[in-house]
Image (cartoon, rainbow, N blue to C red):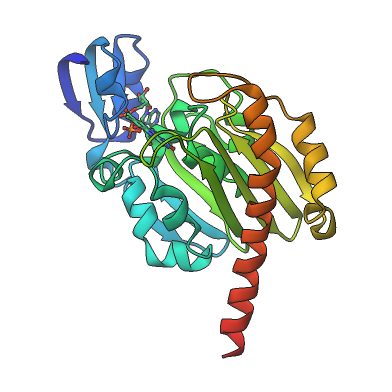
Length: 266
Ligand SMILES: Cc1cc2nc3c(=O)[nH]c(=O)nc-3n(C[C@H](O)[C@H](O)[C@H](O)COP(=O)(O)OP(=O)(O)OC[C@H]3O[C@@H](n4cnc5c(N)ncnc54)[C@H](O)[C@@H]3O)c2cc1C
């Protein structure tokens, strides 16, 4: 169990940032991960009052506040309409509804968990992380960095993409044994592999459709990706199932596009 001596409901993002520069402080979002960490901190800084829990549609896509819950992403109509319901499908396997109603997108992106369905999907969608101090950073960069003391205010998701997420779990509500997210944009197809069990990586980017649908090319891409062993599965198992998930994720993008084209004709 985590223990905090002081609890501060920050009144501004500047106040939260200043407090968070001390090693004895910690930003608390959904508190779902932190509460299990058993840490003793002087000050817990809560971002709940800062209006960071909104999902906004913009000209270029969507801007999602860091305190937006996974459940809000899963159920937001505009977001799911824009991306073929991928958020609804990708996030539904995460623990349970009550859990997803509390865990946040900011907490997920900051944590860079190897097992994150959230990071895998956002990475495939070429999302950007908006940080209070540093400004805008590509998630593909942020994902590789060490944890720092900046605060994520928003996540930006470019529009005009079709995406699909496939995961394998030992049991229904467990963390994934392997997760694959694919997104199709005008730049081609991006495939991300997560829960390898290391942090999610971009396995392929800018792939032509004809190549993404070729199982030999998919197998070759999986062959170049690093996998490992943990309690949930061995390296060989992950290597074996990766091309299957990748092929299904690419197919998912295409089905999503075909469905939308059919709806447009109606
Ligand atoms: C039992 C369990 C099972 C899970 N299973 C899955 C799963 O299957 N798939 C999946 O994708 N995820 C899973 N998760 C992860 C979960 O979805 C969240 O990522 C996790 O709970 C963190 O989100 P939170 O809002 O609870 O963050 P917190 O626990 O409040 O914070 C986590 C970390 O992020 C930092 N932080 C939070 N918000 C910000 C911010 N705005 N700026 C800077 N730093 C910030 C905190 O200081 C802390 O270090 C699981 C978590 C748990 C506890």
